[in-house]
Length: 409
Image (cartoon, rainbow, N blue to C red):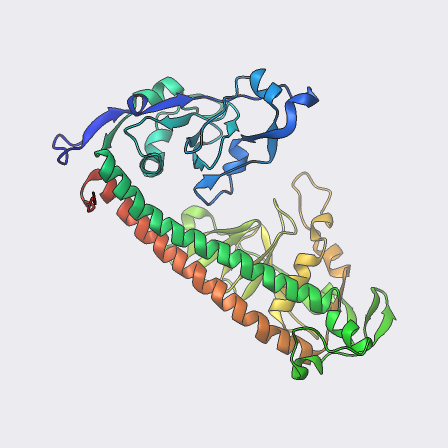
């Protein structure tokens, strides 16, 4: 810490500003300890968690489970910090909550703003990790956490700093929720047109398709025919996936070989980084091959697909990447795995699966509808990256006092 502190700022040990609370796990073989009303959080619940506030995890415990274990009921606003496997996942309890023993949670005292404390810890994850000990996996002991020293401004300035940073994260969260809604709309359109066949059913019954203009409705047939996939709209074809697309192999690109750039790098479970060189033109579809076989991911831009993945090259009668993406998401690709020790997608089995291919005119109008949705999703994602970069640049400056905030009475 600097010897010259900003005016009014003081150094405190974490144990002086927050109560440090561990967690616990009720006995798993006693049914009445589980599946009741008390949220119970594990580090796994935070592994893919992108927000700030968490209200529940995969499992709940009962009052008896709480009483008969070392789990503790934590108040809303508690900072949840994973202390092992791994150290450094963070969230704020939105309501009363409990955790397993993989946490050292912080209940702020009266002179500490909980949101400020959340950002303070977020800015010092590597510092926290450096104090973990253990041979099998690093663990941050409660006694060590209590002794760590940080710089704190007066409470009004804590709140002002928290407000600035929260406003940025609020916008990120708003965009994220908007994208979830937009993705749900795109899935609903696909399901209505190509799974439930709502426009075709309406026309077959002499009705106008709901929410569809006459020009679009005219592109759909008004009857069905029997196929290997059952009754499908008349004139639409059933093809094997192998005649519609190629699952091309990704290319090895270790993390230390990636160069800073604007090209997203995809692994079997989604984006894993950035690079300055593309492997394929976008927009594109990435399919998990090893590790997370069958997971389907969309890239709105040129991309690099690493060697644990396939990427889609359309061929034959269907050129719509939007249709292929949603269709592949609906396929049970996860079940088409190899029998090796490492789970993997068997490409030849995938090629033999069947896929419905609508008429070119219907696919063309589908693309027009869906492109608008995905353009907005991409714009929101891009804005979120810019906001996150601004927040991350501002965070250490605000927390060190290098940049001061205006405190309003």
